[in-house]
Amino acid sequence: MKRYKTSIPYAFSRATEANGFLFLSGQLPLNARGEPVYTSIEDQTRLVMQNISDTLLYCGSSIERVVKATVWISDMSHFDDFNKVYSSFFKNGFPSRSTVVSKLAFGLDIEIEVQALA
Image (cartoon, rainbow, N blue to C red; front, side, top):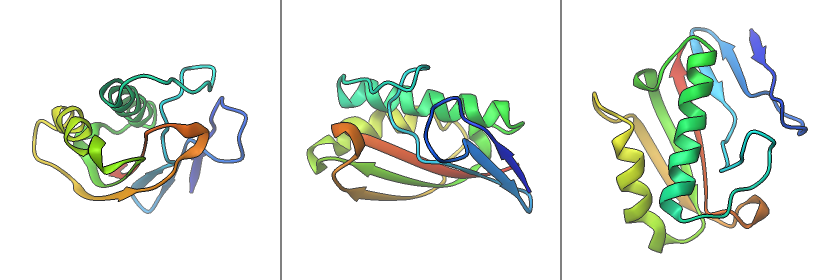
């Protein structure tokens, strides 16, 4: 098992690799300093998806190798706008996905975690 550290000062690994899979921790719309970014749901989704893509590349994988995503949004009214941006990141078909409506850390509107082939 291999763990990838995060530069953000919280008690979790950026990703864990085990048995041919990468398990990414939930990604919030945080900037490089770990500060919340309060923008539109589209911009928050784009930042989260870019952070996921960057993390996957850092770990030797890619967005095309995502097999499962779990998404939390703060309000169901965000679903269509989130989904448009999220969908644009997957060019070769979509992974399995669950979407949950929930209150999120720091009052943000979205969090996404993924599992991908290593």
